[in-house]
Image (cartoon, rainbow, N blue to C red; front, side, top):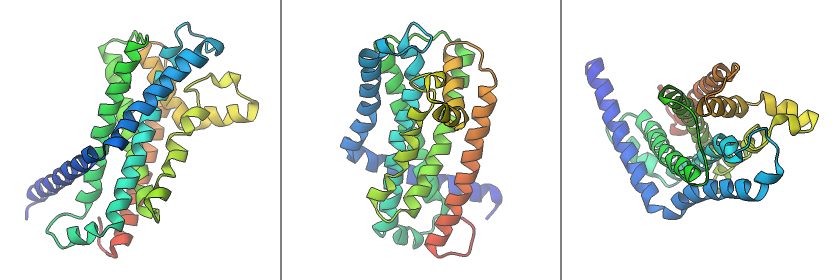
Length: 263
């Protein structure tokens, strides 16, 4: 089989697996609803309950927290991906796939594509809800595209990280431990308050963890202000997490299959 034909065959397999994952997700309506509702409720809570008591240096608090809420939304979706992968590894469907003439990597890539689709839809829903409660970005088209590009890169990176959790976890419940990373880290960043307001030790952590430059870069792009190097840092963090997570996920999957070949 020619290289182009092999690539086309692998892409077709991956799209088939992606369609399967989307259909499975649509049957789990409670998880989908939680993915939509939790970030929106969180945004309403912070804006209308805590917003007036938090000084973040801007008049409109919702403009400040939207990037953090979006990352919370992505984190919520990552738990669904981890659980979905873990269920596949535990329910025997992988053995069925191994008996079929499909590329082995298409299983993981299908999950990743479905996760990106799910994240983009929920992210759009959260942004729409933010507009309803007063979000007023000043970005032009170029800055919007850059902000969306950063968020997409973060989505892909976190998706492959969640795949690792799904592969190595002994149960669906333990796979949800990805939430400790993806949902809690936005709280320990500049997502909801300025790092200057934090205790010194926590401030050092918040200013040097990967989510802070992603949040700062997204916020700066949406509000059309200077990113001060955060854009480059955000890209570097996302690419680093993506490369490491993809390589580890591929190797773990290969071991789980008991194969000596490459994924």
